[in-house]
Image 1 (cartoon, one colour):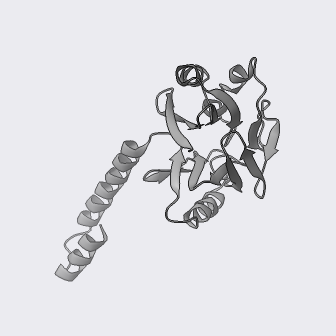
Image 2: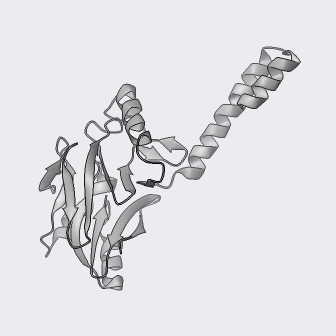
Length: 205
């Protein structure tokens, strides 16, 4: 049975580890040491590496993980990741026979120009596109691309489990609340409103 285990890296990165009885695959290993420690502790052999985009905190550990190992490295076809030897884009599939799992590749540009996600076994690995209570920043893509990418992810089944690249939940909630507070202050500065307007305002908040 496939188990998905988070391995923490840097300040707030998640390296997602897909593990079976004897093998494991990793998603977005920005740092090698936490992965190597996990593999040694759990007595697992690395079977595959999946990258969602080219930022160093997601791919920086790949070269070290490949030392003394020959495993496939999947990543976006149109991004500069020298360690990728299996470039993929939407319409491609990634099969990891050691784990008995296959993923569909989705193009989700916005955070970067050719960001991809991996969807399969009821799980979505979406890198820095979608987070709890937020989405990724626009570094290379456009707002229109990000909107289309989020719409594509929203169309996946409701039971899909989302595995994002960072733990930003509390920060995203804090940002949302600060924006709401600012909007409330701005509305208050415009003067009193009717009781009905205030009721609708409260319902919308």
